[in-house]
Image 1: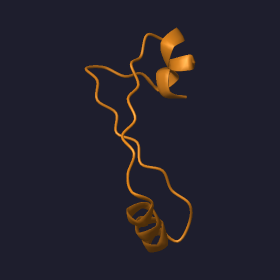
Image 2: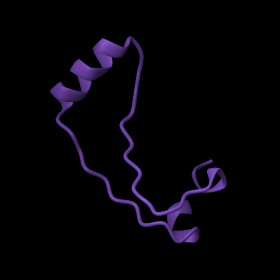
Image 3: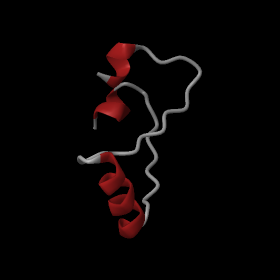
Image 4: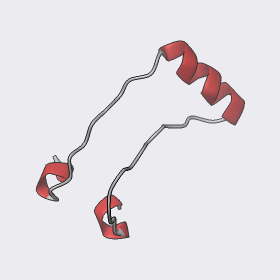
Length: 47
């Protein structure tokens, strides 16, 4: 896993399917929710 190789801890929090579909419908195209919490992040780490 790339996160492990970079020394990044990754946690996933699932959301309900109905909540996700409702949110996607409001956007008009497929979307994903990502929350990133860190002291310092460089673009190369999330590229």
